[in-house]
Image 1: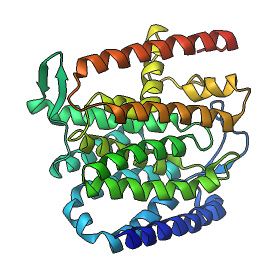
Image 2 (image 1 turned 120 degrees about the vertical axis):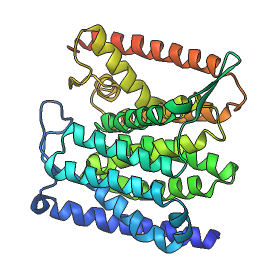
Image 3 (image 1 turned 90 degrees about the vertical axis):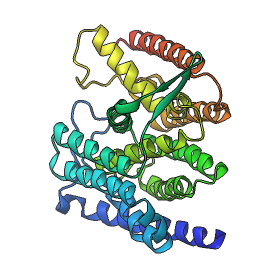
Image 4 (image 1 turned 90 degrees about the horizontal axis):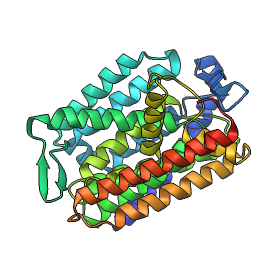
Length: 338
């Protein structure tokens, strides 16, 4: 078993290097390039679509080692694939937001067919909250929310890759500790492919992952998080994937308070502010946010499943309030219009 997994990981790593290098080389002729705009953190035209490279390596190697697992969870893997396809379309032609939403909604329904759904959200102050008929709509809300949260955090070199490796690592550990082979192997294959992708994506990046990468990763983390609910408390998932979630919630709250649309783009996300505070050092920004995510993740893994969700939810809310206050102070210090 160990030799097989080692061989699989080695092949995924090698094929990711080859595929990403190929996409980087032919990005201009393929039309998958990122042209900088007012919100960009880069000034040169850079290849994107790195997600095509690392996901292609996964789907090429995975079936040869885990065909039975693929067959058993065909709906889940098909769901990942269709999210990847809409990401590829977006990298090439820029898919409309409603198209991406419909595809993610359809993919979430496929997860439901595979039994991957949020049935309850835990016990709050002694009362267990079962979702019943609301299970599917709530699952769609959660999956769409986090998939877009990871997409939004993908703003500087290596950040999404680093955060995803940490979060997937935690989910893989949960799968390993509880004998969930689906969780373990799915997390592991993406971790290995991301490590290879970071060779090109670490600052200064020569290629971005694009939506083919960020949407796919966000969806994979979402479905593994739902699977993890069988083993860890529901609210602990909020800490396990804290940085993307805190960024999205902070941005929505700030824009609503300022009476702006929640979808208005700006350069006031967590990574933008930390990068400015770090005097433009991308590497330091990624390391700081990666370390924070690692600490949140360790905290999430240390929590007992039997702990009351109400206490954890209050703790997460207090944490969100603290993050909001700190970031607003940073905005004021920087004199930035947000």
